[in-house]
Length: 117
Ligand code: 5GP
Ligand code: ZN
Image 1 (cartoon, helix red, strand yellow):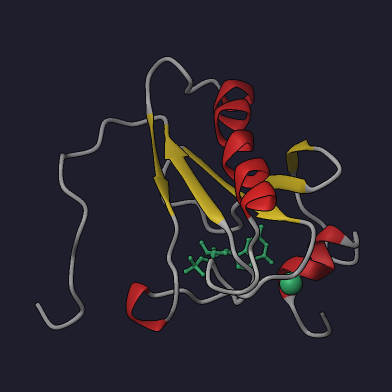
Image 2 (cartoon, protein in one colour):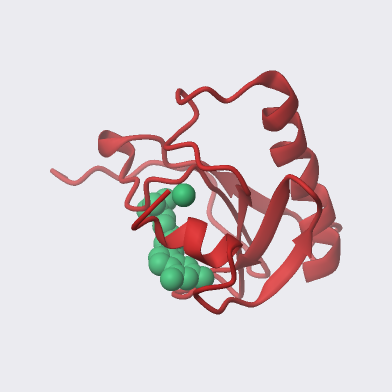
C-alpha cells in the first residue's frame, strides 16, 4: 500500500534490522525501542489492523513467528511481553498491523496506562 511505512520496510525501500522472516511474516527491530528488546512482527501483506481481512491462517503465521523472534533475540527463557495496539484508543500509530515483542528487562505486572490519568 502506498505511503505505508511498514509496506516500504517489507519492500526494502526503508532500511530495517531484520530479525526473522518467512514467506508471509517479517520481524524487525523497532526504531525507537522501549525495552532492551523491542521487535515488531508484521505480515508482509498490508492489513490495517486485526479487523482488516486477517484470516486465521495469516493470524496464525503472525503469532507463530513471535516465539521464533523471542528465540533469536534471546528472551525466550527470560520472558517477554506481546502487545498489539489495535486502533485509535489503543494508540496504534502505524496503520499496518504489527505485534510488539518486548523484553530483556523485568517489567512490573499490569498493563494499562490511560491518556487522561
Ligand atoms: P504503534 O503505536 O502503531 O503500535 O507502534 C508503531 C511502532 O513503529 C512504534 O514503536 C515506532 O517506534 C515504530 N516505527 C515507526 N516508524 C518506524 C520505522 O520507520 N522503522 C522501524 N523499525 N520502526 C518504526
Ligand atoms: Zn502496509
